[in-house]
Image: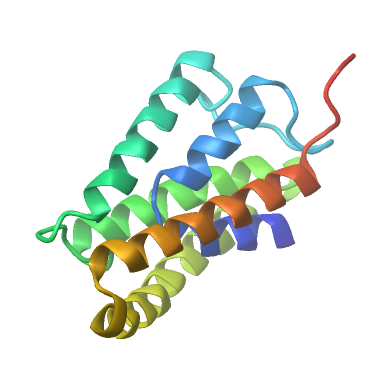
Length: 154
């Protein structure tokens, strides 16, 4: 269940990058043994589309008028994408719990992450803190996926 909670924490910072990573892993048939992707996440076109919108989300985050992640639409996106990603990383018999833990963690992490980002922005500004946040998110997501993914088929 820990991977589901961790993907939820990552989803709290960016709604789309963690689910894009899970979708790419599913499309490559490398999800953890005993788990399965929620419908559509294993589709290569869906994985590619999620990757594209994840990049757009990161670019848009640097825009001065970008809404906070805790507005209703941002919280809803994080809740839903984290639920799908968390369910996909959980063992089949704990799919619902994995999705729920991930979703609740994402919403909580979004509030904590926003507070940290706002404090950092006072000193370093929006763009710099956004780039650092993106780097941490990408590193954390890559590490998590690397730890849980099945080895590539030879």
